[in-house]
Length: 136
Image 1 (tube, rainbow, N blue to C red):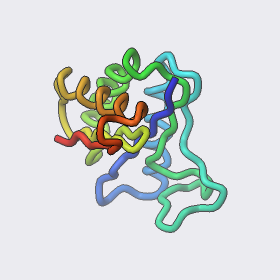
Image 2: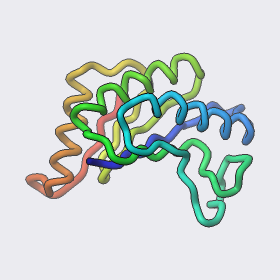
Image 3: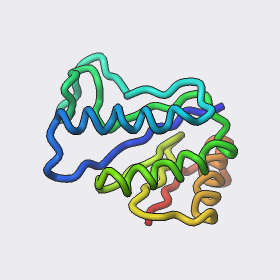
Image 4: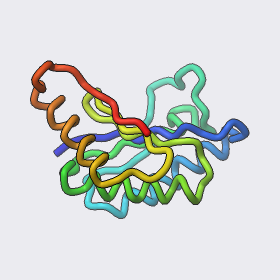
């Protein structure tokens, strides 16, 4: 089981209240998947530059805990792509273990598989021990 983070890159004109609402909306969309826990990321203190109506919530950051990456990640990507299309935000980045996939449009099953392979290599130490990024 793995933990992932989703990070929203908001449109320039997004207010703090809108950022908070969009973050909670993303949580509601993703929590339909077979994941142990989905919630907005929280911080003990509001980080510098945090955009949120709730000072302990990091707007645009969602934690997904306890998921089977190979099984659930393709569904996370599909839901994230649809969420981006309907919410008109810039991008959404999926992060885990130093590996990230930035979604700005549609991604092919091959790109999602490449991300999963990078993630699994990072978790097992990989051949060169480095993490990677898939961006489109």
